[in-house]
Length: 317
Ligand SMILES: [Zn+2]
Image 1 (cartoon, helix red, strand yellow):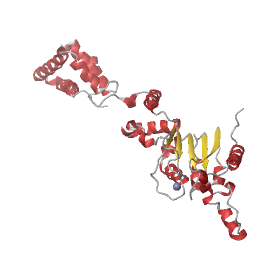
Image 2 (cartoon, rainbow, N blue to C red):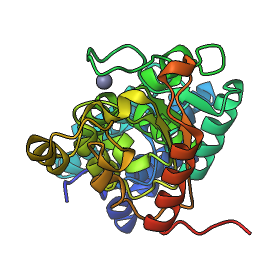
Image 3 (tube, protein in one colour):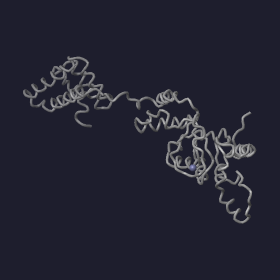
Image 4 (spheres, rainbow, N blue to C red):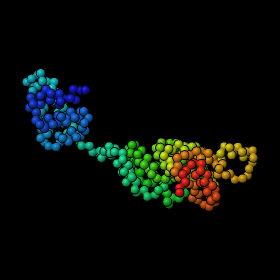
């Protein structure tokens, strides 16, 4: 413990304040100074006490004058006087420090209150589905991006100013967004890339719609299966879903030379898709595009039935 930390109470034990004739205001400030040193008071609060009235500041300058006088007359008191003068100068420093103009201490609010503020801030986002990262990943996998731009706003086009304030707020706000909205991914490559590089997304993703297409669908769905918060999955299918097949199907075709079009059950990623657990709902939809790009309704219904059964999704009554 430094000598200045217990100054007030140590001096009180010695009846120093009475012997030096210190004023009530001076004692109040010296006690507050000890409190600040012990971590019970902010420096700003100490400064505010001094600025409350001219009398408070005068009590400190008077105290310094008294101590200087005592030091001159009683050399034995020098150490105590120096301690008090040092405390006084620190009190004046606190008073002269400009008030904290950095703004409202948002991060000191309880986490629940911050969540309420994020919820309020996001009320301007009226869509329930956001295009996660449209046109940012260069890939050639047959995707349609975005499938329905008039109804799906891109996440980077909604007001994300709050996410640019500081890293903690950014992380909390994105966590909130990822958890509240359905995110649309235009292809599996995009989903794979974003899940790989964004730990907040992996930890908070709750609902997604993804166009099942691309050469890394297996990797993307494998990563998706590790997202613990994932509850809703909407798989959009198209003719391009079967452009890439499972390794097994590729091998079979080498030997059996089948000219039949590939089935959804042989599309790359099917095994990983079927390994996803913990969902409360799953659905399969046609990709939004020309009729010629779509698969049949029967295929859509069959895949949906398979996913509901294999992913053990509880069916609604
Ligand atoms: Zn792609």
